[in-house]
Picture 1 (cartoon, helix red, strand yellow):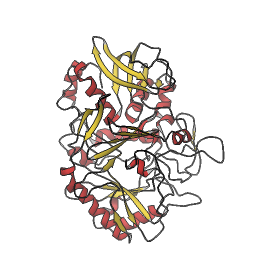
Picture 2 (cartoon, rainbow, N blue to C red):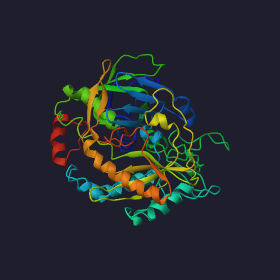
Picture 3 (cartoon, helix red, strand yellow):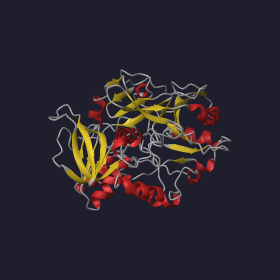
Picture 4 (cartoon, one colour):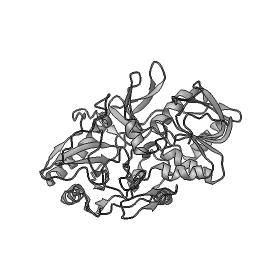
Length: 472
């Protein structure tokens, strides 16, 4: 993987922007099909958790209201904050490994193109699950099943709002088995040590040299397979804009590594371009490029942002020690449906650097004192999806979120009602997420930003592709 290296190629068949889940999957499949592929990633190449932890130094950008903590970044939008991965592997550097499938009812929403259904996606869910080796939690030979997991299932089973048949140990891309497994990269994924530090990554092993690697980061699977088939990854290469030409696209980028020799804006030509830089990154690039990309619907670009209905880091203070630091960060979940929403609630262990993650501390990432008599939650559903992404900043035009939670507040209140019932069954007291304003609905953090680039149906996609050629 390149870091401060310069790209030698001046032209390429397929250029992929971003190495998170979107970019990694596409790069893998195209490279397997024999295409020449280059991946440009804005963040660093973090080879193990120790390097990521050492890089946990805040870098606050006053113009664009972002805070950088090594391998993840917090965007401080108006009304909502967004966490996103910055590094080779994107969001897999800090994700909790959960591999849920969207319920069938999600696709009944008229905003989805008719070609996209749960039935059509099922084979791809299967492929991703196999590549990431996702499976439900296994009991640790010493610690057993975390107390919080068992307590959640027992309490939810007594909740009237819960569909008890939906309660489950969620499939997670973490090796919680008793033996090491070999990842597609050829590296070993050793058994999870139940440290609860999924956000910062698996720790160094005290039994052998190297990382535990229990969690399936993309560098262990999709990106590794792509490289095995000739794909090249260049870290710390930040794309600024894209220009349509007669034979493809000129993609402009900056090598932002400290050791980079040439830091001026450079250009590479590509016949095909895939934007896989996530909701925030992809929308930012397109907004900075819209005058040079004929055919883009500028009225829709940046519209319909959604936080995925994320209601993250609420909690219950309990009379019992529920071992919040034991096990993977998320282990169990179930549906708490209402008339208007399919609400899904998961347990959430104690998360390292929570003040930094919530964007409450913009200077120093901290490990908060752990309240062992507690259990956290991540609830999800369908919010109003009416946020707006626009460019902001005096020095450089960067993405900024404007989220008015007014239309989503009734949905958030339905989540809170379910969490209060769950808290009562646990014999504890419910607490809103830090920074959340229950009157306005503002102050939440989403780890699953959506929108900004509206999905096209096949007919619309074909007509725009004729104008944009191969920009995906």
